[in-house]
Image 1 (cartoon, rainbow, N blue to C red):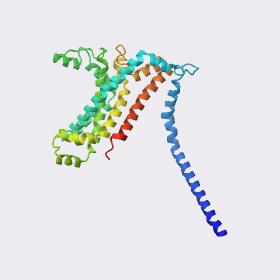
Image 2: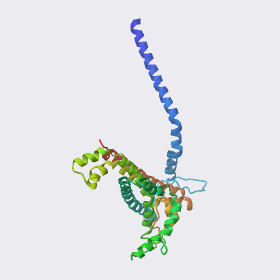
Image 3: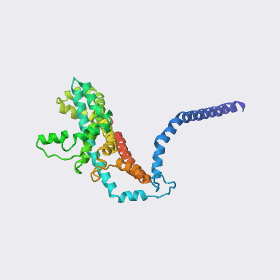
Image 4: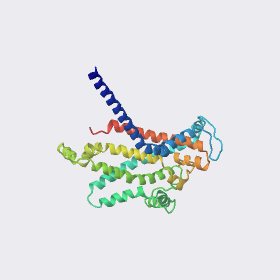
Length: 311
């Protein structure tokens, strides 16, 4: 009987030791991850939850009391014509900036990688707008778009084309700001595409040449473009999120005008929250803005999972 009891007691002791070891590992994991977890809540998740809760209140900045308002801010937003115009402006800006900046960034990357001289200079020159102070460069573009002495109107007049006050015309002001956005976004797109081009194995081009793809367009269609799938998806996502965040040029050059034609989501959030002190309504606008950013991110993740694996 004692011979049977000893192995059972040893097995139970082993299980207790393994359980204690697993508990100690879990405790060590929580202790090590704890600071990062706390910082994420303080810096990211906590403010997001606070903004979401604030959007259901009636609080204005400076008021000592706060009351639950339910969906009142969202109902006001749905009935606000300025909000819908702002949303259309934002989507139009994104639809104008993203395709052109991605296409031009890809073209610049291909041209730079195809050349053999001054490659480093062109990389630095195209990337310079990314690191430039946009407020300072917006003033430069203000002179460029000037109706009488601006370089753009002078060039159009020299070519015999019609001119306009680009930043004061409601039909052109948003696209004038879009040109600045494209100018700034091309550099980042180019750098990311250059990284994607360098990751393409040279053997694929040799195999394509064996299959008869001798021309530059055929090599691009059969090898370069399919292999740039992940890079393209990443560039589109980053560019779209940055386009949704347009604020500096609107604040400096147009102040949302003329006639709200350049009013975008981030600028309206700033006006409602810091000019009119309507903190709860600004929080509701922020929730809508975060929803668009989250939607773009989810689409990027889903597409990356389904269509951009090399296998």
